[in-house]
Length: 115
Length: 119
Image 1 (cartoon, each protein chain N blue to C red):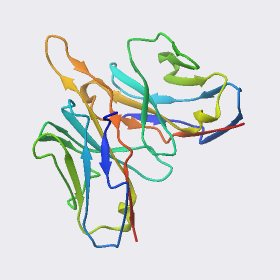
Image 2: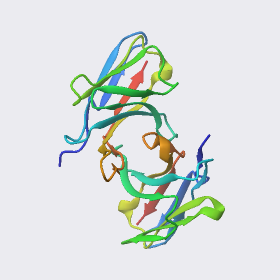
Image 3: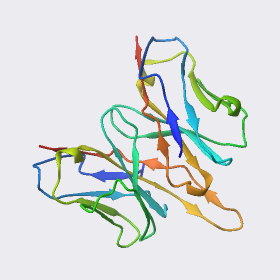
């Protein structure tokens, strides 16, 4: 069975601070995909990134960066110089390659960025 | 922007009533998914379609739930004899998936969801 744990329920920061959202996963498969989605108050889940289990390179996209470490089964997400618009619930998710269609989500981390 | 569209956005119903939700996926997407999200939780998979064929159903999908995608375009999710435990956000998602010389799986694109409240 697969599982995603986001231990941080809520994080509050002040604008321009850096913040890291933790994600730890469990799976028995050797081939799998990891995702991050953002859910603003409007409710829509916005896709941020997908990584496969064979690609451990860290990725940077603007103020966003992701650190994938298979040794610790973690896929952490860092926002640099946070902004008020970053306030949302962030979900980490996992899918196994043979069941790519089905995502297992963590419970999410609510990020509050105050001015 | 022709993203995934869901209707209605909100639905309040009394216990025991039937409700139906609609999802219009991104037009070229051949796969359509339904997820359910309760308060403080991540979304949970319910079912998915490839074109008009329903390929997988979660154990969460009780007999009171039925989903259809009659022409491989929009989909409906019906809940019969609603219960208070059905109160949740119902999310629809779509993606393109094809197997050819170069297999391709796009990530899921979600709609805004339908929030159901059963009183």
